[in-house]
Structures are given as C-alpha cells and as structure tokens.
Length: 78
Image (cartoon, rainbow, N blue to C red; front, side):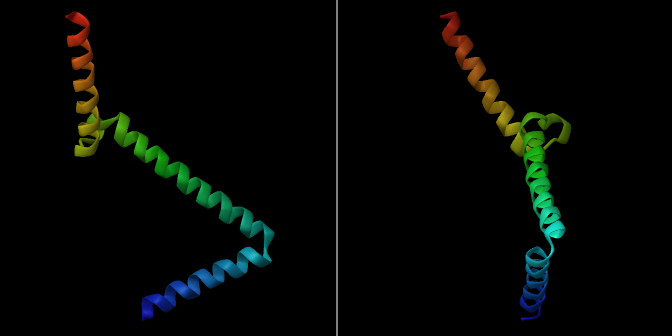
C-alpha cells in the first residue's frame, strides 16, 4: 500500500507540474524522447556489437545472420 501511495503522489506531482508549467512539460517531453533514443541505442548495441558485450542475445543474432550467409553461399556455389 505504501508503494502505491508513493507512485500516486509522484505521478500526481508530475501531472500537476506538466499542466501548470509549460517549460516543465517541454523538459518532460524531451526527457522521455531521450529515454526512447537511449533504449534504441542500447538495443542496436546488443544487436550489432555482440562480441564487445559478450551477451547471448547478440551472439544468437549474429550466428543466425552467419548461418543465413552460409546457406546463401552454398546455394550460390551449386
């Protein structure tokens, strides 16, 4: 119950500031746009630089890509 009250108070204060102050609403919008860009950047890092980070998701993407290339080369050479 305490965490629900905390989040309710936090979001109600943010909503009040967005409604009353135009500069805060612009900064609020820019902050969430920044979060979206940061998430996309991290996802692209995971997908395209898997051997830097050594994670299984990125390695799976790269292995899948390499297997497709090998299959295309085998079909091309036949």
